[in-house]
Length: 210
Picture (spheres, rainbow, N blue to C red):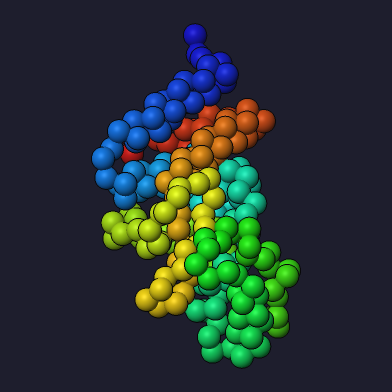
């Protein structure tokens, strides 16, 4: 007798939760982060299969199923670097960054949403936190490198610390944030699959691997 959808989803949930728990036993922090983002990437494929590019799929999944609405915010420090050659954008961004107290960690909720920063035809998607998380994923998986600042406090959301040497704000992606996002994304995926009446692993071949 074939398993019901509820039984399939329950088994999948237990499988992923077991893997998430086992990541905590890994000694190296960078490796733990790499495992979390790799699992997020895997869950995104369970939602959307191969219907999108990997980056689009990852970003869409994090926003729509993971529910990370702060991912739509524009990173002011990254935007300042990206738009250094645009006087109008640079002035607007510098004006907002001037309100940040140097030496005090800043939450990403200090960053604006796109509609609060849009000037002209500037493409802000590159410095949205959704895309920065994708770039963070790429750095961890393809270069074994955490590009963020040193995590001073942990937390359930990314934040910034001031880099005295360069006098810039460094974005920190805490491990606890990745774990929380992964847990929320798993629950979102299970709800999505139940609504759609689908097996989260149906995109995988049963015998043929290609």
